[in-house]
Length: 64
Image (cartoon, rainbow, N blue to C red; front, side, top):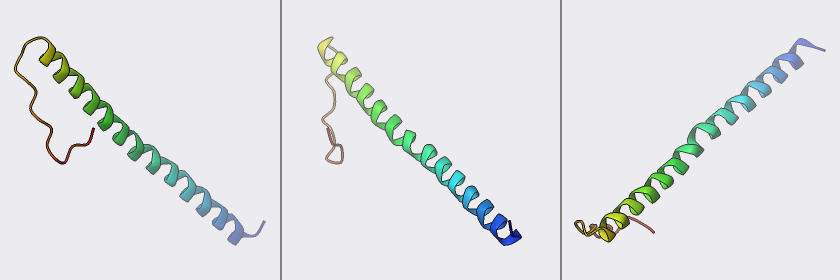
């Protein structure tokens, strides 16, 4: 196998591996944020049901 082909193959493998790592780093952050929002909403609903202070109205930027 020529040297140029080895370098090209190595570069393609390195780029493929780094692309996978980047996807794995950013995707779970969005999922974790959604899960945290869900938990916060549940806590506010429990507080309303227990007779605590009412939950504040969601701001216009929040989507349910």
